[in-house]
Length: 251
Image (cartoon, rainbow, N blue to C red; front, side):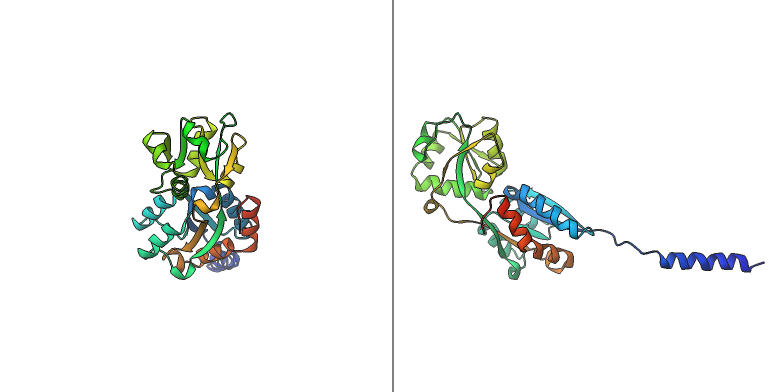
């Protein structure tokens, strides 16, 4: 009489042991400069095609905002900044693994805006009403623009005349121009390429500002996370670099 329940239990155990146990998805937290939003979404999609077991959770904002969040304890495994200074800041704070700091990609600075604006070069800017650029204190694109405008000799004049509108990110500066809230904006060349509502007035001469580089690194937490290490390697792979070039970024 007792053999039947015993046989059922045995069969149940065999079935349970034969059923594969699916591992819970591993979440990788990515903190990245806002100007990389479209291309990183494509890169993440490509990565997850071959790594469905990994879930990438991106946080896009200005580099300074992200760096300060990480220092304050915000979780992050991979950090990509829009200039070397914020990466150096996290190195000083011992928040990133210095051995993993590498150049992710490069970009150029342009002045763009609504087609109706009559802008030829820097000499056209003082006649405009409003010009948008990222806040130099936290958005690297704004610091690049500040340096270029200072080198051209008109930054302080524009500032004194309240012609400059500071934005949180490069994307916000572009939106202001798209909505014609400003006459011009200083943004990355790739950012201008995403919009059909603005045109590039001129490319800022490279001698007026430092080369735009986007460094990446594993955070101290990410350096001990095997999944984060795999994603980091993919970001530096030929496949990711090809996607970057398709979006207009430079090697």
